[in-house]
Image (spheres, rainbow, N blue to C red):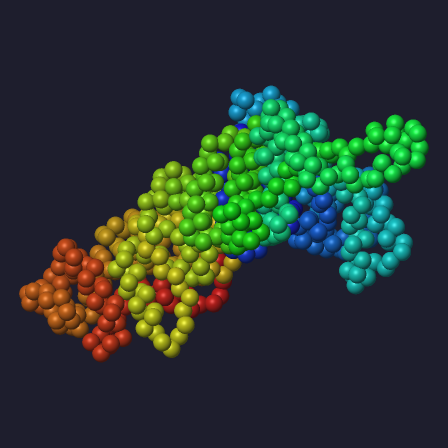
Length: 597
């Protein structure tokens, strides 16, 4: 069983978004992009691991600020009109659409073993398909009460803009908000018995306090793991062992001699009958208390004495192990913020291997985490990745078909962080262009540059579309540098993806990059290639021959570009000119405006 789709609206910095989820959820994005908010939102309809119902301490602070500001603006502009209308009538008008609310809907794939527990979640989606869904709502149930409240505000306060701006809290009273957990489409309330079968465990980024003292276990999940492995026979053995331990302590400390009963017994004839019955007995604590006294260690030392990296590694491993072996909970989500925190490169690889192995073998829990580290971004499982940008989620699974995903997997230089989150990105077709552009940019000592150059194979269209969806509303720019290859139709197709001041498509004038370089620099390259690479004299006497030799001779392509890159800005290549299409791409980033077509 797993969550396969999520809808979130009105929650924190997420105004409205939805995305598909594969077996795992891996969230990536810049700081404040909404990764933690997505993890928090997904757990809102679920019950916390341990005792308790689904209710979350949601407040107006969790409601999207943009929606609240739209509501305040609407109230200011329509305050007098709202006061004139009948409350019951106005409640059915546009006023309803401006009241801020939070809705978080989860859709599940339910396997045969779990259908018994979740049959009451069956409903129809908007297309009439039978699905399993659950929805958390935080909203004002009765808008007429809100209107009545606004009328009271009207009697007390002035309705001018300045006065209304100073009483915004009273324009949207929190006490009118209620939380609900329902089955969408049917609006049936979800019972406690059903809700307790859907649990979550959240490991937030601020988890460094785990096991900071010798006496602190640090996690109820670890205690549950220990408790779960203790059968009745083991419990009997523990109790017997405790009594043996107590008898040893009793004998060693002479507990029976602590009280001087003989002193009183000698003075009173019947004292022995009373004092003789007083004894010291073992007081075995509950099993959980015993387990709480256990201290985790590493290398025969208390875990509290280890560094943050080892503490986090043990903590996460124990949590996953506890969920993996939990056969009592039909479904649970484990959400982790930045699992890479404090871990060395080797321990990061160890942890991600453990996480992948455990999540794939378990069928009752689903792993979800946010990360800034490429070790936790498996290249062979990009369908699990969701990119967050300014509160919007973009899922690889939803946006890219199998062919596009395979294209990304095959690319040896894939770095989604650089590709999607760099301020300025140039995509090129091969190492030659990458070397040339990087060396040129480095040679410009009088200016700074923040251009990221990434080498990809041909086939940029899917990447460009995905990049644009993620970055449509920010100031990032993308330039593409490609060879013409005598393919005018391909050139026309990709140029349709260009966007003014956002995406620039730049193609060679000649067949390939080498043709354009030779055309612009033939006179200075003739002696250069002869002296540095010992190319044949007849080749160096003709532009076309030189370009063909460079393109087609084994080893010549890379060797020539390496030599040029090393010699740029030296006297030998002082007058070297970059091809026109490359200069257009570089100059494209100098324009600081951000107008989109």
